[in-house]
Image (cartoon, one colour):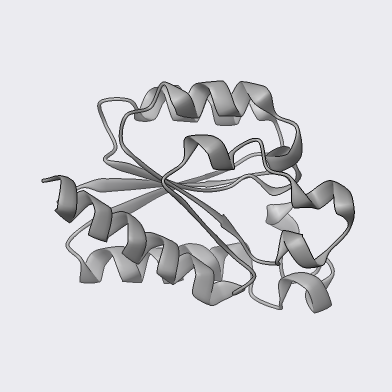
Length: 147
C-alpha cells in the first residue's frame, strides 16, 4: 500500500458554493472521498491537504518526499504563476498528476498556461469530479508501471 498525497490549492475549500456552473456542485470533502475510494480500490490510501497559502503547499510537497508515492494536485490559480510550487514538485521524484475541475483551455486566456504542467507526469482537466477519480487511477497505474 502506498500513500497518495492529494493537494488542493486556493479557494477549493469553497467548492460547492463557488461558481458551480464552472466547477460543479461537488464539495471538496466529496472530492476527497472520491479520490480515497479510487485509491482504496487500487490498494492505496489518500492523505489530503487544502491550503490557500503557497508556502503550506510547498511544505507539503517537501514533506511528501520519501514518504508518499504520488501526488495528485489541484493547484487552482497557483497553476498559472506559482514557480515555487513548480520548483518543489521538480524535487519530488514520485508520480505527479495535475488535476483541474474545469477546462482551463476553454476559459480566460490567462488560465491557459500552467507552470505546473512541465514538471508533472500528466494533467487531467475539465472532467469535474470524475477527474479526481481518473487522476488517482492514473497515479496508481504509473506507480504499478514503475514498480
